[in-house]
Image (cartoon, one colour):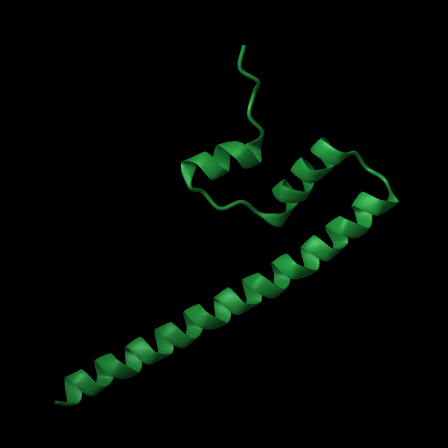
Length: 76
């Protein structure tokens, strides 16, 4: 009998992105909740926020450079 998949596994197989809350919930589900796992999750949350911020900055830079390129094309 095949075991039920977690939300994270389902998202992974479907190629979907998951939020930090779902990732932390799944982590606690697998590892239990104690001071050690709590501290690990706090670190995970910081890294997730940092990565999300970098991703948003990259998207913004791409948007700005694409618009700049399009404006240059229109001028010519």
